[in-house]
Image (tube, rainbow, N blue to C red; front, side):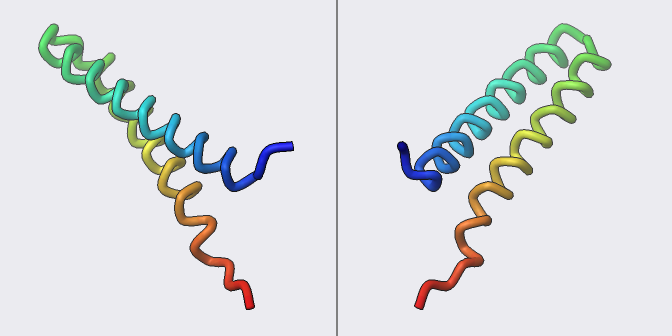
Amino acid sequence: MENPSLIKRGLSWFLGLDGTFHLIEMIAAIYETAYLTAGLLAFSAIGMFIACWILGEEGKHHHHL
């Protein structure tokens, strides 16, 4: 079985990458004047980055003695 922290780190990395792709798509939508699509992509990208941040912060609150 794989280490759960390794899985969380991989998931966090994937969410950050997916959020970056959403930002690129948002820029293309703005260029094409598809503002509703750009707004939905921005909302989705923000959600991805927040999830990535939460997963990354989770391990910093545990103190091992």
